[in-house]
Image 1 (tube, rainbow, N blue to C red):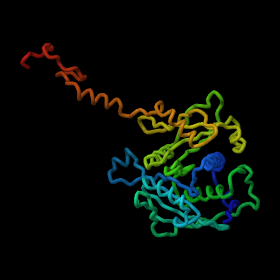
Image 2 (cartoon, helix red, strand yellow; image 1 turned 90 degrees about the horizontal axis):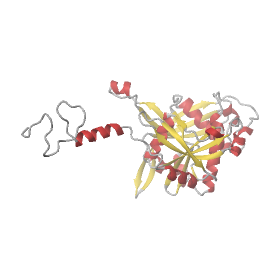
Image 3 (cartoon, rainbow, N blue to C red; image 1 turned 180 degrees about the vertical axis):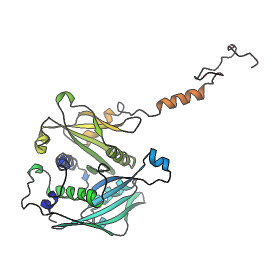
Image 4 (cartoon, helix red, strand yellow; image 1 turned 45 degrees about the horizontal axis):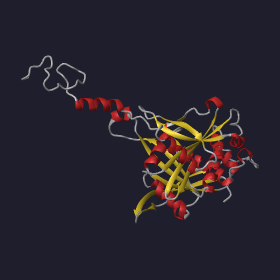
Length: 344
């Protein structure tokens, strides 16, 4: 279907950074396709909403969040290709609260229809079970320019560009998700029978700081954590570009260097940073997996309660003397301890 790219680009937005990111994401998508893997033709988004708990102390101190997942595609779930259906079923099998949203683009409007999505396992294979369809809403588009300038993203197909604009418009304007409480899965692919998730980043660095760690938002870190717990193979691919080249995403793609990233959860509050590993050339899933495997022993996160567990084991293995607050070694047989008699 012809997409109203001019009207979609006319929607008021803060910046074009998400569209610039499509250039590097499309390069990763092409690398996986050339390697023989299937890349999803639908979008997957995570929305982090505030949970309504009964305990007021939990609401104040923990501020719990409920994660919901939105699958966006231009066709209903029964019309997905067989490979897309398999990938979606294997990815969402371990996720809770998945909704499938079909978008239909017209010249001046976008129509959305939603299904609740569940999975069941039949003979060891996950099967999608969509619920009844319900109208989700309609979004009016402003009139756009007659000839939109798409040269900034010349390597990105119009279908990919239009789908990204429609998905973000739904999340921000129809679903009304809070700013910073949503993120999309950059690359979702199927390697054999394993779903693969790749978070794609681009950073402008000087040569002396090319390998500095990256920070990751709590929403992005939580999204990757949920997908990894659901059985996905999670990786991070970082395009390190020279300073001053971010305003030209196509040129930056040619001048940049791809590196693998190792996500590490910091102890304490659960923040996540990404350590940059060696270059991956040429870019491939095999190269990302090899870099992650080589760095696995060095990137093992420190348990947050390591100090408490050590103290707990010390209290379990030793006895405390009366009036002593520190763990002290037990008395040795045949040696009288001061303050104790042989019969005490």
